[in-house]
Structures are given as C-alpha cells and as structure tokens.
Length: 513
Image (cartoon, rainbow, N blue to C red; front, side, top):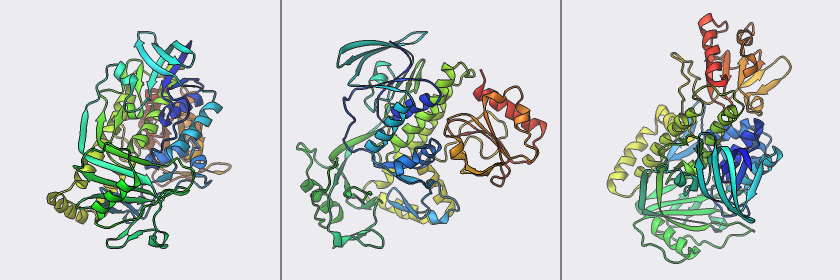
C-alpha cells in the first residue's frame, strides 16, 4: 500500500496532525500500536497558547462543552509554586481548558474519521527506511506483517519513539533521578473544603488553594478538583527509596504527611474512572537533535519531553502538529516554496528550547534547601512587578514564541500567534478564530480602500481574503498562516508601495512554489 503520509502514533498529537492534513485534502494513514484507545489517565487539560489554537480549529466547544469562546485566566496562576498575580496585566495570555487526555483523543479521532482519515489500531512499527522518493515502513498487525510505502512519515509515537530510534536521531537532555512524584484520584473530607475559595483547609497546616502547586521545605503538594472527577492529590519528594510495590493510597497518605507535616485522610475515588494511582521516579527533560530527517518528522513527545507539571509536552505537541500539517500538505500539493519543510524543525525546536528553559527554571526553584528558599523569597519580591509577571505568564503560556518571518523591520504582531480579533465585515461580526477553521492562509484587509487584496493580483489565489470595516487599534492588515502565526502586518490605514511589496514577498515566501 502507498500513502501520502503515514503517521505513527494515534494519540492526541498524531490525530491532530491527521486532522490538519485532512482539512487540506490529504488522507494520511495512522498506525497505532494499541488495539483500543488508552484509558490510563494522563494530561488533565490544555494550558496557554494551545487553547486559542484549538479554538481556531473549532475544537474548543466540543472539548469544553461551552459555546462561549475561551477566556484568559485574569486572576491567579503559579510559577514554581509561587503566585503570579495575573490581575496586574491588562491582557493575560494564560488560557486553560480542563479536558482529560482520553477525551481529547476521542474528539480528535472523531474529527479525523469525519475527514476521511484511516486509523489502523494494533499495528506496531518494526522497521523504517527512506530513500530519495519516499519511506518504507514495516509493521506487525492483527493479520501479520505489512510493508507500507509513503512519501512522508511522522513519528508521533511518544517519548520512547520507535521512529526516532530507527532514524538514528539523538535525544540529548537531562535526567532527574532524585525526585519522586505520587498522584492519585481520592476523596477528601467535604467539610475541609472552603466553599468560597475551594481551598483544602488541612488542620495543623492551613489552606491549600486548588490547582496550584504548594512547596514546603520537605517537598511539594497539590490538590486539583477537576470538574466531573474526584480530586487529584499529588506530592513531590526528593531522595526517596525506590518503590518496589504497586502504588497505594496509604503510600500517598504517608507522603502527604511527610510533605505537609499533617495528616490528610484520603479515601478511594468515587465514580467509574479511569482513576489515577501512580508513582513516577525521576524524569527527563530532552529535545531531539533534529525534528526532521529528510522525509521523516518527529512530533510531540517523540521530539521533546519535560520533567515538569502542567502538561507542557501535550501543549507543545499539538502545536507541532498544526505547524507541520499545512507545510506537509503544501509539499504534497506542490505549492510549497523552497525550504518550507525545513522551517518546521527551525520553528518548533525554538519553541521546545523555550520550554526547556521554563521546565528547568521551575525545577530549580522547586528544589529543597535553604539556598533555594532564599532565592524564592527574592523571586517573590520580583513577582510584585507587572513586567515580571507578564514575562513569566507569557513563558508559561508559550505566547512569547516569535518566529522569524524574514522581514527586516516587522510590525510587532509579525512572527507571533495572531491576536484575538473581533472583526466587523460588510455583513456580520466575526472572530478571527472562526475565519481560521479551514486551515487556509488568510489575509485580513482593514485598510480604508481595501487595497491589500488588489495588490495580490498575481498571487491572490494563494490566500483567502477577508475585508473588514473595523478591527483592533494599530492593525489594518494581517497575513495569517494556517497555524495562526502572523507572516506580515501593517498598522497604517493606507499602505505605501514598500509595504505592499513586503506583503507580496511574504505571500511568495510562505505560500507560493
């Protein structure tokens, strides 16, 4: 069998890539080693820039259950178990979406099948080899071995990626062997919950706010009452003896007592599950040496893993998939300009390295010891300043990533994820996220004379054009890539010849062969 793209891995990242290709008219083949969707609880939701991204694809409503667009957290968040007062910011970049990973997989798989994607479960890849024209994949399935052929292969097969290993791509990074994380869904005494703040008030210790990691001199503790699920209770400790027996609630209770110096009576979780009950010894923060090897690409945990909380791997992985999807589709449709596929590695490694900084800085600030405590006290003083809070909030959200779009003097929006816009067209009010649902390049023209589209007489079919009468102050034109990043922008109401020339150059740089 021959396919345009074989995606190895049917988790959230592989399915997101399949959806992106499906939107562009490509029908990829997804190979997933598990015969059934994995029920093991993993990530509990999405955080930051990725929430706006799923809104751009119309996935926010089925994941959140709300028809309202996503709204940022403008109150309170944490960095290394220290408070970030987001109320200091005029515009918070921290968006959140509570959705367990199995629900994300369910929604994405349904969307992929609607788009005509073929998903084969129970298929384990055993060999991959590429040549000048394509990639040969051998896989073992329910009916025996299969040899498959594709023009491109994407490895979205997790931290222990077979595709990465078979391709000989190194996975350098840092291992943490001193830390033990324990987590479980459990019940807590109902009268310990403050109805006003939702805090868990522990006798002998005090209140612990929900969802926010809490550090003591002996470790870390968190209490997360996700909607529709029993509370998730977690601890972090250092230099614990390795656990040889399966994790139990009694073990977690003992860990909580060591960390808080007080007892929390944890009961078994209610409801059908699946429920978390796990112990993780150590962890890794690693980034692949390259995300592209000729016709093979790495996506998500296959390309990067992080030994920190908050689900950074999934947040980045979904964005990897959207970045790669439109570029692969352009190559297959023969509309890709030279070097377009190379920008996947350049751009997403940039984002991955930024997350490494985030993960390692938080790990250092979470560690035990008097020196760390002193550093945290100083850091807490800095967190009273709006500029510091804004900088760290953008780091946590991933909204500080800015790609090089090849312009010498770009507008401040260029290279960043498109701002949240509500536009007034000739017939209606519409959000930018609603215009982005088809994953096409988009030119928003808010100039007085609607002159931007006219300047693209030779290249107009490469992008969709939307004229609007009113938009945000300081922006009169935006060229938005399918992944939501701004390739060109202006703020003047009447663009001059040089600005229009830059627009034409941007269209040809990204969307013309």
